[in-house]
Image (cartoon, rainbow, N blue to C red; front, top):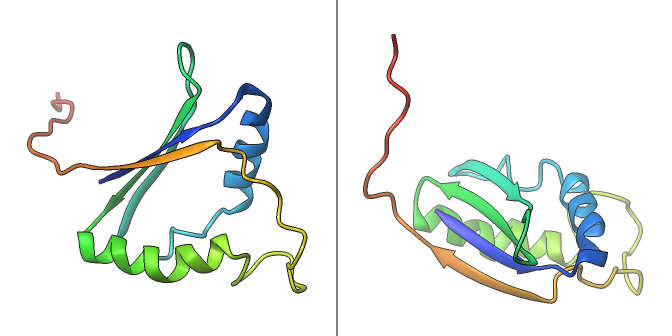
Length: 111
């Protein structure tokens, strides 16, 4: 699993959330993608967590080197046009990528 920690000033939170909502489908069709969550901080931090789960590290790396780079350059879907010169400033002031593997897990017991 990957967790991207995005430092987002309070004034930019709405912008960040709108951008994630507008990118619907950008990762969901990627080979090996399993899950996505955008986690908003409630108190004590300006850090949003972007949680994604992947079938393998290779699947994540393939997405990073292909579809993710194209999406961040403004290619591959969306508004059309050249996209040059009109890219909005990033909402986040910092970004850190954490990688984890599941060692234990549990789910609710059934009846």
